[in-house]
Amino acid sequence: MLKIGLTPKLAGLEILGDCQDLQRLHDAMVHIIGSETAHGEGYIMTAARLLDVAHELRMTSMGQRLACFFDNGVTDPVRQKHKILAPGKNIAFACRFLMPEALFAIMSISDFIERYNLDRKSGLPDRDVLVLELFQAEAINSLNALCEDGAARRLVLEIMGTVPRFENFYTQYIDLLCQSYLKLEPDDRRQQVMTLARSFNSPGIDYSQMVMDLEETASRMHCGIADLEPVSEVPDLTDQDW
Image (tube, rainbow, N blue to C red; front, top):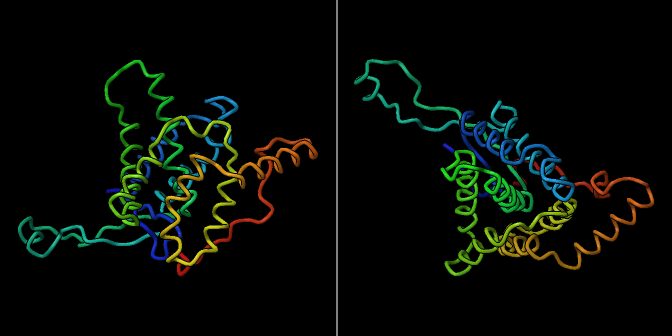
């Protein structure tokens, strides 16, 4: 059981599942991505950010984030039928990702799936690829609830469009998008999902300016781009903020 849904105030997406499902998603992501350097210098920052998502899933599977109970179908008639004593609810674990970070994960994982498939010798279906594609499908299904029919189709095309897209991508841009997105009221966020997806597909002037600033700072400080972080951090959200 893996469910992905919108948070109440549309701050992001919530991923919910039992420990096995969350661990399976983590394992698939780590297997397909590999290490930060497995795909060359151009993918170091993208891979590192996705591996952070995988780590969050791992922590969630261990019960270190959110937890809730759900009905498991064990009713009194079931107990009588099978002569068992069993609880009527199971526990599920959950974690949340801000909308720009969630979209980045959904979109950028396609780059690694494509590279992984090119390296595979067998043409048979691969379980880890299918797990990640299910993750993408569940997330897109939730996001489509924000769109009318025509817009939903366009959103799918934006998210699952041409790959590769995230080679030499500066992931500090995700944090800038998060900061801007959180300033919006919940009703305004509904209209921004398509804009966010387009921002990743075709970064605009704000991305170009950020790249110039980062490269200038890295040169001045004699460090790598990946070592730099935005001046202002993305704030932590309370349950009411989500």
